[in-house]
Length: 117
Length: 107
Image 1 (spheres, one colour):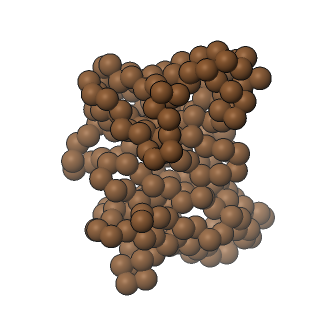
Image 2 (cartoon, chains in turn yellow, brown):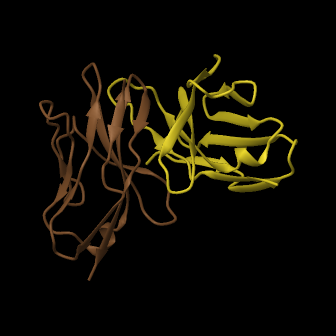
């Protein structure tokens, strides 16, 4: 089956610093990647949708200057949390889709836990 | 507005008992509905989708457009079914998730 990886799996940083999270599709080309945020014991909230080679589409209420998304290749998307603050601490999950209209299944990464001190 | 509602945070049943995880949705077009499952310490994975009309691990779900529901059912729960279950709806390519229901199956 399709595999999506995320790196790092866990990161702790100081307030004010920036953190980059990588999402890779290991065995398929992902034309579309999605970034979600999950608070403890809550559902996944879609942050943005990114298509390879184009700008990401952000959901309402998500600051695009705060959460920079780059989808430079068909196998890699990155999420950079800029000037992180404690309220940005969360579990960030990416998913990837091949974009095949007959099978638009999303494959999820294992998530990255961000803790901002 | 597009919304997925899972009214139960937690559902506890005994092994062998029937299970029904409720999901209701609101969507103005023709939705595609999914159930995702997350076992302990594992990533989210697709359990089933309504267009497939198949049974996975004994689970089935029928889309009821009249009641705007997509409840997940299994006649006899197993302990290995204990997990977090998310109902989701697709609006184009993006998935809208419900808040999830934790299913706990005990012997």
